[in-house]
Image (cartoon, rainbow, N blue to C red; front, side, top):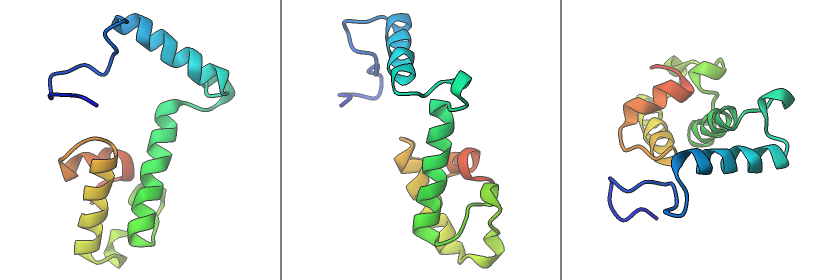
Length: 101
């Protein structure tokens, strides 16, 4: 856990490049690679769309859902949940993952 907002998520024993290489090595070992058609960021997008559907019961706009059929407060709550799951506090960031309002 980070102690303060300016802390790095890279462990002190590594520099950024070493940690990035380690991250991609671990991903590759479990079958997550662009060559295999799966990216870790793509998995992030997929999970966040699942969160939206869990809250609203409907697909997100990027998955073909329509926000016109969802209660505005429920949509807002789902977007806030997506933002928090992704590590942001701003609801507006969710649009990058699930589509705009």
